[in-house]
Length: 232
Image (cartoon, rainbow, N blue to C red; front, top):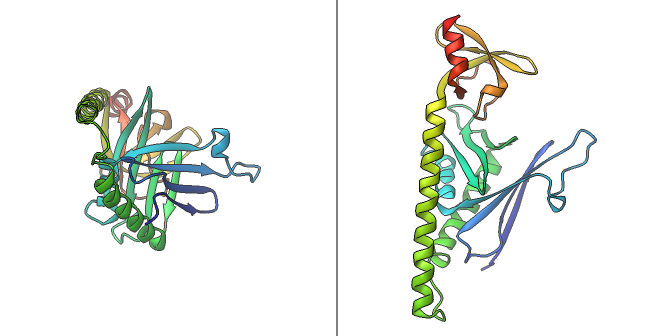
């Protein structure tokens, strides 16, 4: 059985690469690149594109959407001081087209790519649960204990940081449902409720969305702009 894996999913303008260098690592890399206006693809070797290191928990959540146990999922991935917004959702109830958004990269996957991605992530998750969550016999007892304690502390710190981020976001933003009925370079015309339309600056929206008109979807919008819209 191979110890490393790499699979690419390319479209006309955006490419998605899933990589795992070792079954002993409790994470999987998902990398995004896009084609520049000059027709040349971004190069990961030149620090272009976007690379996210997904934990086993995040891979499990993505699989819940791929396996149609959830319609969508969105979250914030924190690495050092950088927060990257991530979302994965089906385009509609037919569940034939899937959108994966990582930062400013949006990749559409067709049914064949979806099946391959689901099988690959399932294999990686099963493999890593077996090999990446156990310790090698050659390790000394004290080393095992120290590593275990470090892992626990690290996970608790990550959970605490994530909770703090989500609490801050919840206080300054609100998730609303609406349909895009118009768009400019800096704003979208959003239909919120029965016949009520408002221009929402793109800079005040902090979630990925599908620009397709009249598609009901959720938007994470700053509270100040919602208050301003409601006061009009």
